[in-house]
Amino acid sequence: MATVKLLSDDELSAEARAVFDDIRATRKSDFINNFWRALAHDPKTLRRTWESIKEVMAPGALDPKVKEMLYVAVSVAHGCSYCIHSHTAAARAKGMTEAEYQEMLAIVGMAAETNRLVTGLGVPVDEAFLVDAPAGRRQEP
Image 1 (cartoon, rainbow, N blue to C red):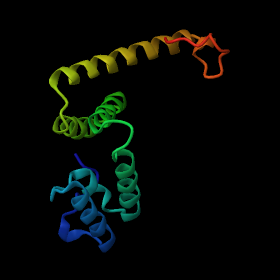
Image 2 (cartoon, rainbow, N blue to C red; image 1 turned 180 degrees about the horizontal axis):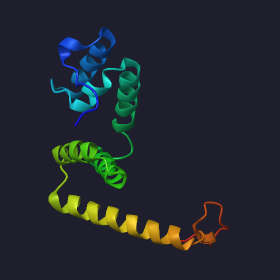
Image 3 (cartoon, rainbow, N blue to C red; image 1 turned 180 degrees about the vertical axis):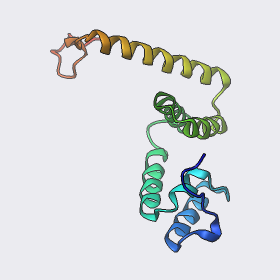
């Protein structure tokens, strides 16, 4: 349940409308999701968030599908149902298979478990894993 009204296009400020126009043009879609409609109450945050998302999710060294899958993994770790759903849909649209989705979730679950174990046990980082480890002593986990 939203804590703010989701603004319709008719209720937008001129600044928020400009951001929505850019979202539509960038995504080549008329659809504006509820996240952006909620953020539209604060056009400065709306613009800053959109510009950051656009930059981070733009083509780069990582494949767009991988970027979406990483977004899903972090969203699962943070318990954001909205982001899990929206970025799972985006990853599937970019070609993520059901097998990839299930494997990613298994990794997220395993990482969460081992992260808690290592934190609870206070396990120190192995010298071999440090970026400045002496040559020949760096190791894969």
